Structures are given as structure tokens and as C-alpha cells.
Image (cartoon, rainbow, N blue to C red; front, side, top):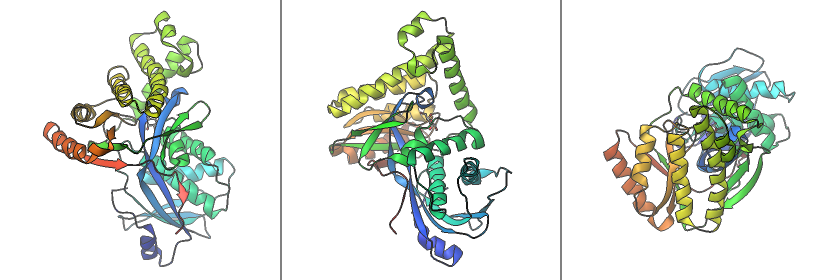
Length: 378
Ligand code: GLA
């Protein structure tokens, strides 16, 4: 999956010598606030972005899925009855197919070509976008029912049980259910979503540092198990039900205490941030984003040098209301809320100053809230 202009239909005709039956658009996401809260039954506030996977497909009569990316002349072929786990990106489509089968849904072979302009490894959920794109394709070729929330949960299980990352539901849920034009506040305890409207005088800038997350799955899984241990020691079913008072009264060790403090305080920040945005109280929204970043850096310890450098640069720039790391952390992207009238100038300044302060080439992507995974009209 590389960054490129999507044009899946032409590529499909090129690869398969025939027109596709349909096309799926499946977006990446950026999370405005609420990090590492989803697997603690907490709150998150993500939106789908105007960067997506564009996938053209056609049903096949046999039991194979033949998938091309726009750039590789060789396809990945998934034998839909095989249990041998593929390596590389092929494990995602294969995992979706396996989970359809596991849940008793109909599966059928298909041909597909997809392109993506979501920078991979940036924390913008290119893998959730791919999982949902494959789920939408399988549902279309089998004429099945599309229940976005149910599919998101199924695709989360692909990550948990097939890929081996103990991630929460945020990425798949926003990718599947996003409504164009609004950020969603999601309660990860029951998957309910509530729209948070961004007014026209504010824009979202994705500040990709140009650095990629390396092998951090084990760090991620370790954070989750520490949170679960903290919840158990506090006597609650998840950290969603813990309070700072409970933490003060407990004898949790320092590590678990700091991880729990992040989650408990971050849940409060998500709710306060939604209110601040609704009230157009940008200094409050910005302070909450700064506090979120500091908590992720100091208590949860999932920031990294490039992310800290980006926040350090961006927070001083005119028109930037707030900035913080987004996604799992360690490397990848930050997100900023910026006054629309300053957005162009802020983009140029951040780009220049980040290059001066850190040895990486940033990519600054403005995005409005986009629509979740769907079949395209053409
Ligand atoms: C990754 C995971 C999500 C979530 C974030 C951190 O993106 O896939 O489930 O936990 O990290 O908020």
C-alpha cells in the first residue's frame, strides 16, 4: 500500500481485461482526542479522512480472491478455504474472509484491484480501511446485508485473532460508520456514536511526521494488559468505571497507576472537548488536546521524538488552536485544529519549521470529515 492517486477502475480493466462489477471507497481516520481509551470501554472522537482505499471488484466463480495493488504487477492470491496465514498485507483480506466464514456468512471468490492514498504506518488506519473495503466487497459479491457496526466489530476481531494486535474498536468503527461532515464521539462500551460538528471557521490538519511506526505491536499489547490489570486491581470491569479518587485510594504500583491515570483523565477530556468545540471555545479545546498529548507522553509513554517535535513546532504557530499525537503513537502523525483563515500559512510554517528541527520530511494533509466505507456510484 503506497501513496498514489486512486484510479482503481482503469487498473482493474488493465489487470483483468474486463470491467469491474463495483467499486468500494474505504477511508482512513484521524482521532481528534481519546487515545488508548477504546479498549478500556471509554470515549474517542475520531473522524474519517479524505484519504482512502479505492477498490474495484468483480465476483469469481471459484474459491479464490485475487488482489492487486496499483503498484505491484503480481497479485496476492487468497485461497478462501486455506488456513495458512499469509505474510504481508495479504493477511488482512485473508483474515476478513476467515472471519466471515467463522461467523457463518457466505463467502465467494473475487478479483480486486485497489489503490490507496493513506500514508501507511502513519497511524491513519490504512489496515482498518483495507479490512472494511474487503468486508464491503465480500458483502456485495454475496448480496449479503451490510451492518456497519457489526462489520467493524468483525474486522476488529481480525486484528485481535488473526493479525495478533489487541486493538480496540475505534479504527474499524469510525471507518465503517463515519458520517460526512462531522467528527464522531463514540462510546466504546456500547458503540453508540454522537456527532460533533466542526464549524466552518476551523479545519483539521493531519501532521504526518514522515516517520513510521516500527514493530510496536508488543508495546501496544503490553499497554492494554497493564490497563486490564489496573482495572482488576481497582475492582472494576474496565477503566471506564474507575475514578481518580479510586486511584488515589488504591495501592497500585507506579506503572499501572500512571497508565490508569491517563485513561481516566482522557475519558473526561473527550467529553469536555466535545463541549468546547460545540461552544466554539478554542482555547479550551486546544488546552485539552495539549493535556492529552502530555498525558500520552508522560503517563502512557506512547509518544516519540518525532511526535514531540511536531507538537513543539505546531503549538506555537499562529492559528493553531490545539495539537497532539494521534493513533497508537510512537511515530507517525499528529493532528491539529486550526483556524481556517490561518490554515494555509500555518501549513507552510509547520512544514518549514519541522524540517529544521527534525530529520524527516513531513506531509501535512488538510481533511474535512469524510464518509465511512461505502459502495461508490460508479
Ligand atoms: C490504534 C488501535 C486503536 C486505538 C488506538 C489508540 O489505532 O487500533 O484501537 O487503541 O491505537 O487510541
